[in-house]
Image (cartoon, rainbow, N blue to C red):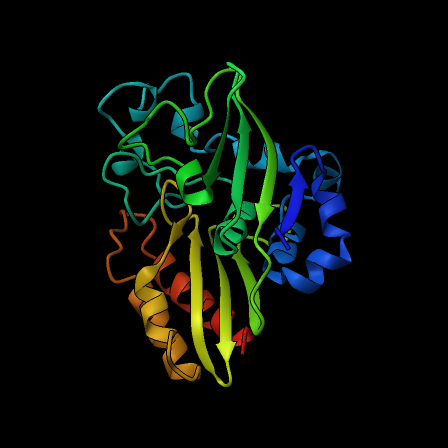
Length: 261
């Protein structure tokens, strides 16, 4: 009754092989199945996937002291930015590398953390990830000595369907250029409630309230799904090299929504 409890040392391969996750949390299963290669999923843990650092090449470069390293400069703003954020990118245009987080946020999962001082904390996925504008040192609320101990996913309500789509440069082990997770609760033939989460759009995974407004209370068809995709991108601020992400997101949002019908 309390939901699905996942220990954070479980490997992505073990999660991928779970029939329960595939049946009840399809979007999560799909996100895990598209994370890295089979070899990586055999060794990568759930906790490690959530706690990984951004893969922005300027952040990882020893030659660039970027915003996340304490300066005022995000080199991606005027540099090579084709893989970078198209939303909330004023201070830092990096994107979080975890596609699994996109699906977990759509299911309103919570993260349990053991602090180094012996205390514990429970945080929603939205609280767990921190925007660089307010906390540039790390992408999450984790501090030195902290351990993620568990991820808890609520039991989906009756009539809930989900779907996840990842778009990468190649259908292999590439990180997402854009990904989306949709969890929609249906009452009859109308959408009663939903969560739509975008990954690789901003420095952290983000819920699109604008897209949700377009589908809740409506009978879903292609025109409604198209409207949701466009609404999600309404406030996008693409950089010089990543404007292509806008139609990509509009398309995969539309397709993921229609897959839940």
